[in-house]
Amino acid sequence: ELLNAYFTEMVAAVKAHDGVVDKFMGDAIMAVWGVPQGQPDDSLRALQAAQAMNDALVVHNKHRSEQGLPSLRHGIGLHLGDAVAGDIGTPARRQYTVIGDPVNIASRLESMTKELKTPLIVSKSVVETAQRSGGSMPPVEPRGTVAVRGRTKPVEIFSVGPSSDDDPAI
View 1 (cartoon, rainbow, N blue to C red):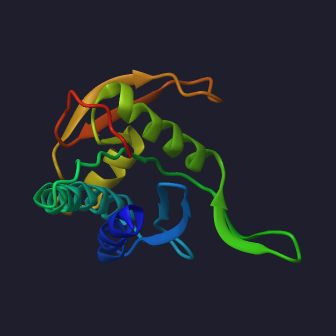
View 2: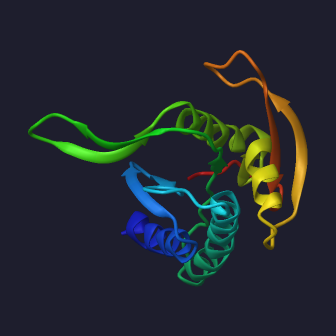
């Protein structure tokens, strides 16, 4: 019940910005933009969706508090790049998904939200591409470069949204 209510709010934010929910993985949502065909403002819409997810979580937590329930926290990582999209699996069970380096980096960035105590971390490539699209962007704060497992070059990152002293639970 807890996850279904949370997912309902988050998926609405993704869809409102033309994202596609790829899958649910435990308590995580994997969403993508640019499939089956990319648009020049994919990064901006992904960034806006992530900020909308943060805003939706504030409202969601207000409702939880009114019911005497604890607040939820989440972490979001955004990165962009070329990935493989298509049906992957066996003849008995296939699933449409995306795989590749950008997916792995986004996942690593999401993991870093806990230690950096911020709900949303995006790579420099997302920020630069979003800025070039000319739309309304949430404010971003440079956070330097981080080593990302599986990569030899560090990734320059930005945070979006308020910092928190609490560890994200979701």
